[in-house]
Length: 231
Length: 125
Image 1: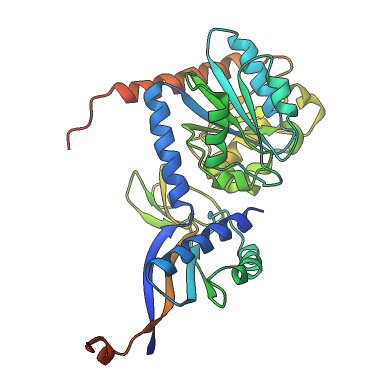
Image 2: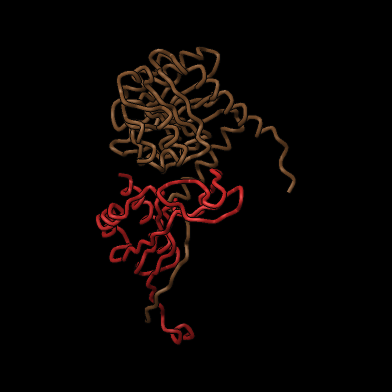
């Protein structure tokens, strides 16, 4: 008997398998015409309120559903249930959602014929940024009470998002928050970031946000109908 | 703090590789991280120390290679490292910057120990 050591080259992201599953689901929903939107923010920035306002704005004109993640309770699902199909995902203490939990939630919803599927992530500006949930669009909310210096402090979150919503703008007269500073700070990290201001309580900016979502979905569907590229 | 779940995934993958290659034990696990990997080195080290002994990887050394955040400009093709998360091309000031390294948490390679029969023994009838 003899002992030898052997090096096995791998060179693969530890989350490669989860990313593959996410990519597969992203393509499947693109073919079905469902835009998947991953909504991220710190706790209390207004993700659920934004989704309530979005559902109210559309009424029955758009089919939307929500998968909402929290460490515990189904409070957010209860808030959203009067407006649209919703499934609460409880992580049992984990700080972020992962694709298997999203797939379980979708199976519990029992249908997938939506125009928009929103995934309301666990409130946290750090860990959720690292996890691909099959979204076509990643949106980060920044409420004005959090301060306009946050984008630079949480670079991965803002780098990996396509849109930033500055929320609770009705409080702007009461807090030292500069909308333009926050946008400038975020665009140093992600120059192509789309930026909107919203107030879910008054409805300010909600029509623009919904129009943006519609444009994103139209562009997703247009990409689907393009003929395959000639190699 | 999601390092614990990433380290769990890492150890599962290494354990599968050990079995697949018929190894006895894992000597070394080499991983790569960078400024946008979304993991903190000390937290990875703590999670690894806490979890490794409960797996077939027990006794393995974890070696972490840190790489800079590298990028290429999609407008002028300049290749550069990103400092202080300023995603602008230093050559042409474009914001159309593609990150090429430093945003993954990668398993690079592993070193395993294998026990072999002596070659002569194989020729025995």
